[in-house]
Length: 257
Image (cartoon, rainbow, N blue to C red; front, top):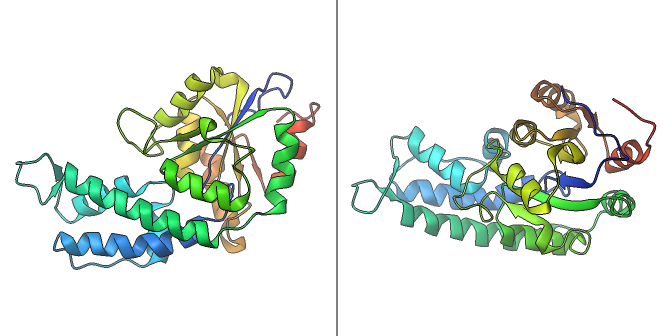
């Protein structure tokens, strides 16, 4: 298990977005399931997935990774143009763009500002730089940040997407996006704190050498004990129940974990 950085040395909070800054995962999977099932049908795959099943099995992954994994599970690998594969890179890119469009629009309609998030983040922003580190596409983050009132606290220049910001798209638990964000911000791993709600996200940050706090703010009550256990096993330094608790913990320079 890692330890929290000394608050007097801490410079940047690297914040996962979906399910962490806002409760976007359930509505996102409502919209994404439609596109996912259309995608599977286009490959001649008869199996269909409910939003609940996708949420339970693919949280922390972006659609590109989910699509590749689902296709491969049914014997359809991704191949280059002319390779004979039913799923070429170009076709996959088209489906990624469609899912991004549908989900982003839906989230922009249903998400709302949450004082229990905005208040603590404003307190933290008075002391530390805030950045978003996500598997989701930047266009999706734009819609979510606009709808939730977080756009000014975490502007576009401090949003990092494993789908869009890296030379090659990837997804958590790959640590590449955390390493890239820290590099772009010019912050050593020891002077940053990641905040994650999901197991893939926690593994991503920990593998990047960044101290990590688990956050179960938007995890359903009946799933919190199990999520807390998984996050702890992944190496997080602490698990908090709310953003207010995290702000109190981080801003109290006398606290050590």
